[in-house]
Image (cartoon, rainbow, N blue to C red):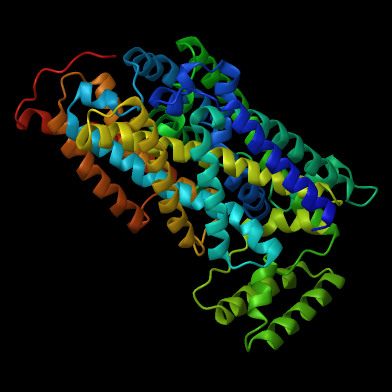
Length: 546
């Protein structure tokens, strides 16, 4: 990057930190640190919800996902608007009436302590692992730009994020996400405009889409049918998106504390609901445009030389091995194929190049999907805009990771520390211990990031697969709590443990694609709870809280 890019990058990030510190003045207790004293208006709730979901993973990986697999990933979000309506009707009123800090407090009132603890533990595990992947995403940028070792980069990035989150709590997260999203959306629109502008003079936006469509990239709606049969292993189609996506969104926004904590900061029930409903209206078009950016980048490279491999840092490392001559020879053949416009040969040579990279760097994954958009930005955008776009990705990382660390700390303090370790902390001790738990989860997430190097998927896909292993079971527990008043804690607890084991088994056997795991997990908990209830000892009478 140029000096101008570095100046813009550093100035933007520094400004965000100062702004967040200034706006984060709040009461030094749990209500202030985790819930901003329940004072946020709906538009800040909306921006905080969107900012928490739209991490650096989204802006780094989604364009690459569309570049390689087309637009069909957008179907993943089709069930989200309906989920927002259900959450507003059933979830929000209960959480806000009980004035809970975490969603899992409700489960103790409805069932018992062990069910609350199990559900909170499942959340902590899934969100802690996902946050590690989210830390790894911006580390890719520093590693690629500066040639740093990815492990040292994870330490630097994770350390900055821990300081950022510990300093302000939920209020800093909410206010900085407001500014972050404005910069992010503006930056992505600028990138889309420049992709089209950099194409040949006679190629416009419509021409670029037509070209990509001819290569199968505009596959917005797919039916998931292969050889006249529905393919349950097909990852993205209209049915898995509407049904599986609905269950996933219902669990993520309705039971995941990283999102529940965002709308519990609202100053009223109405403000929470408006923020959620607006998110349902905005999220699908927003994700569509981010994916469309990847399709435009694909069209761009039909007129310009695409790299044979998009991760420069890995190429440099591989060329220090005995495979250097083989890689150079493949690069020369690739250039010749471009000159001859032999697209079949290009694809074959890319595959061969990745095969050699795997041999040169054993143990490393050769998937370069996560580097496609970053490489385009660095190689093609004007000076200054590169720094801005890199800042966009950093900002999206900071907003989502800060919210995740805040939610992990809140669950640990409220559901475990104050429940089992020290029930009588003063407000000052509550505040201090919350910050230390934030630090602890930050360290855990850095450790996870160290192992995220070879996931074998695009990052956005990896995060959603990980969530789907847990979200269905968590959702099933809440659905039983809301709608099956005769089922007690013993039945739902055992049902959840069995269901989680079965979900992991189904995933390992690759029976269905990951979106369906959310449906299967929720239904397993419901069915097993109903079956087990008559044969288990009766629980104490439960309260009708919903």
